[in-house]
Length: 155
Image (cartoon, rainbow, N blue to C red; front, side):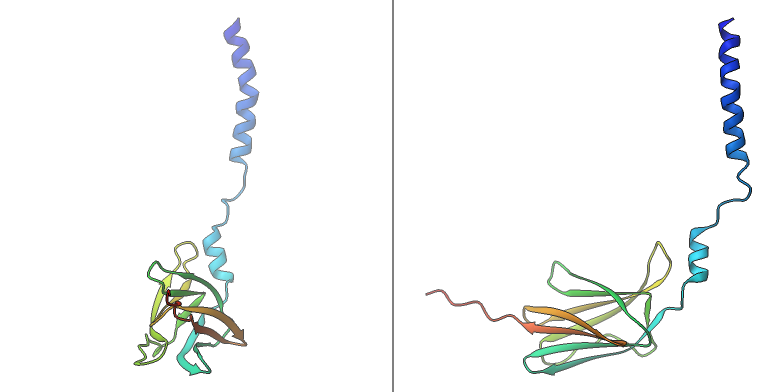
């Protein structure tokens, strides 16, 4: 008697579960494929230049469209600027100025794992400690470096 009652109570629940799971119609759309089909073309980084002026040094990053960035510092103190949805154009390569505050700008092209979109990573090293600020004007990103004053000597 008890066995029959348990089976009777389970049957409607199993039928409901089967209907909900089996009647979805079509498979869910693939998010990655839909996003890739609707996303605009990547921005091209068209030029890099280092400009020394008035006690500051600027890295100028030119592009053919709007830039979106993230910055962070490495344990070594280098500044990293990641440009999302951007790829370096042909001829845009790393820089190694012989003099000035900026000693090296490494250009690396990467593809983000989640969206499969391009990303340009700029790793910037300075010859001495400096603070930075970023400024965007149209399609030109300026990374301005100001050297920190040397530490005061102890008496």
